[in-house]
Length: 396
Length: 128
Ligand SMILES: Cc1ncc(COP(=O)(O)O)c(C=O)c1O
Ligand SMILES: [Zn+2]
Picture (cartoon, protein in one colour):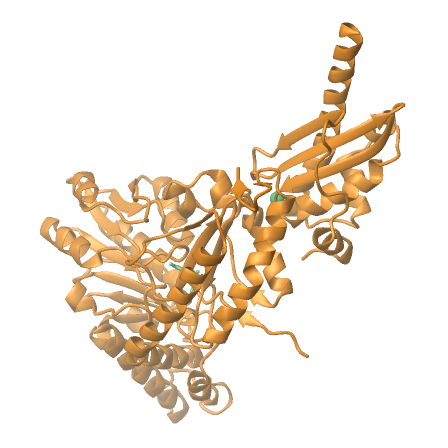
């Protein structure tokens, strides 16, 4: 019997959707022209780029000339923040973000701090939500940019981006949001939200890796990040990865089209997993917001055990997940997100993230629910922090 | 990521548990990553007759605890004290570089347990 394999690490990356793959393939060997060339080969490639741009624009509620392809979600984040910072430094040098952003944003802000910019990192509450009051209080005359993620990649908490956009607009400050995890899991309409810049990445929505998009509202003052030829209407240079752009277009289209059905199914699987864990395993804590959370995100802390040991044990059972434990970070620090929501180092150490995807079924969830309790139990029996009392009751 | 020896010790750790009225107990924690290791010793005639451990930590920490207990069981206190983190990592056939710090606890834990034993036995000598 072959071992069951369950992939629940879709926030890390997703498989490429067969329809996306199918549309990409001809652009490697058949339509390989450079979109900047004026001959028929180039025009074919250019046409594919235009179509992909239209699809992304439609998926986001943007105009086509507000969509710019980048080499990744990370690049889109870098461009938004550095580009706005450098283009607007005559107006001010202050940026507001949060403590729970992806490193693509945090490290960019830290870099800017070394170059004369001042950054406020907003706290979040125990569920990972920012306070609009604190945001208002953080705004100064020198504030030029607010960058707050749409939804968090670790704990799945969704921020009130519409309200943030309103505050930013009132004060005449640009608002960027990292929607890399939100895309495909939450409805995104840039005009409805009123956001100025928004990042997405294809590989989180069943598209290829190494391709992202930065939505830049018309009229935004932003410098280029990548200098060179005149691609992307002189905004982002480098010969376009046409196949990946085609993949991004199709993936964005599918994500928007299937949104309702996808989130409905993910929510039901997610809640089955959350309820099942709470029912079967004592001393667990759900990290993130109980309701304002991504439809596919499950994040628990298992007291008295360490996350990497959990991950490896699950991996041996064919289950692929992730953790915010210090021992998995390579940097010796537990996840900055888990610390920001107030977890102790020990509790953060025992975190397990399972992010669901299109391929998951109820049987997968039941398999996890069958495998996880004995694994947690075995590791707890190894743990000096945990004591099993005679009556089978657990105490610390 | 981990070799077979490490995975084997992680899945089937040796000498897990506690010793009641142990002659020496050592508990150490890594301020860096948060792993915690606790060692219990039974010592007779300067020989480690029995050893048990409990570890809150990653596979590297658990496997290091397990193999360390095997390495010092039946040895004299002096032999056990000469054990280094390097010996533990070598016995495991190597660890990925970022995981070596999780194994340092094994050396520290056995030292702490022996120190505790020496303190305790001094105490009995003084009072006896
Ligand atoms: C919230 C968030 N932002 C940015 C990124 C980076 O995207 P990419 O992997 O395309 O560089 C990720 C992916 O890990 C993410 O989860
Ligand atoms: Zn460790």
